[in-house]
Length: 206
Ligand SMILES: [Fe+2]
Image (cartoon, rainbow, N blue to C red):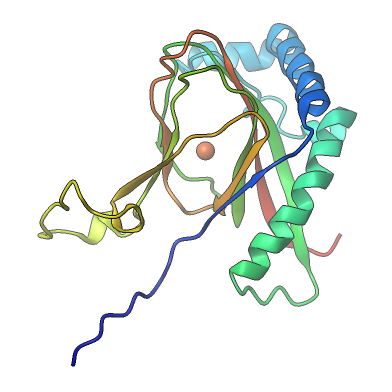
């Protein structure tokens, strides 16, 4: 008799925030005002061909600057700890600590190519505004670069064995993953902006 086992899973954590309407309204207002007033951020987006607005390169300490982002950080902290537990990390009395947090305002036609998040251990996104028909976030099998001669997988491949896996967020969705996991945001085909808050966590003892 033969058995097949499955090793080395890639975990992606998802939670839906209940009763998030007020939180999302406040975050949306803050994001909209940043996207008008953050001149350095707008300049960076223009220079780097970033569609829409991100505060990634100008204001990535929003939870320190603006109380509503601090509130969001506190909510995410619990989930980051739960995720660290699910990963069986020995964090030696420490805990996941938010190291940076920024907003993204992506217009119709915007996309974000495949990337990882350096200098952190857990990364993620909280979704504030998701227009009907806005695309998913797509995660890439971290072993893809090793698959020199492997045949492509069939269309009927179960989700957990595919080379790319999509998650479609709703307003109030929280997604966490290990920071080395490559991901991309395909073209936003929906009319209207998708507003999200992204962040990186490190392990610390604060
Ligand atoms: Fe990202």
